[in-house]
Image (cartoon, rainbow, N blue to C red; front, side, top):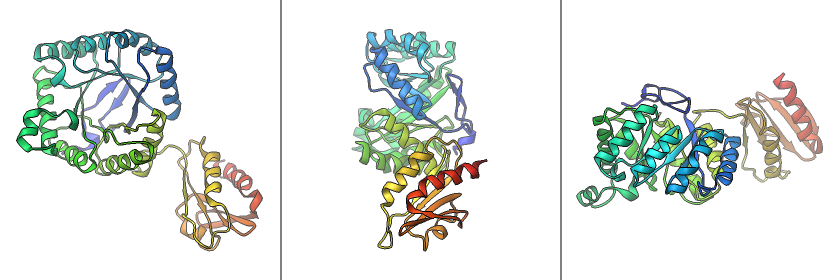
Length: 352
């Protein structure tokens, strides 16, 4: 049975993937890879947002030719995404990418796959083999009549066996579908059969709002099962949004922590303040902190401190006044118009 700490580790640009290492966040650029200036600008934005691995599409010779410069200047390990062309895969490996993503079944046959695998092995570069519900083999579709979890797993195992027969085991495996239950079921089945690091995600999840919900449900379920060594949130949105959502999913699953978490009540008829604006303001104020604090913003001074007792510290609001509390105990009572400033002053004291 797969356990995150027992997965076979691989190293991507010096970063460990699997073997109990932290679950790494990745995204994919949405620029023309051949436009190195635009692609590097997007990679730097991703790095600043907390991305840890970045993938670029390599659909043609122009993109392949840009890889050397991208590898040289990228602040993140670069993953090349190649389909249908072993020649482009070889070019990506020669350019020095940190990882290669291919589908062994569409790279041009066993002999061409062997060339790619030998080159990757010689350079110490891991390969992600990916199965996607949208490109499942016809024989499996005809056998089952539709895309099934067992078909996705069988396709992945076929690819893994191909790589293992070539003596290559620096593998990362993914199998994705736009259906959350299907994806979760497939990953759970695969985890019973292999101990390679798993790249998890819900493919074609959707636009920013719906894609976030579907990704959170699917990726969150897998993380809570102890599955997943790296993840990508796939949104029809700027890639920085993918990283922000990924960080929050990891925080919600309590797999990793990235600075403070602001919790806030949904408000009710007792609330006498614009709590949404207050919560956003405090969230912005604490966003640069690195400490994994839990900060509560509550709309009622009657129940606020008690309901947020598990928070490290927070505020509760009343008419024209506010309470600052820590561990469920009130430490200061301040005017409403001074609440944020007084809270931040107390926070500085708390962190000393």
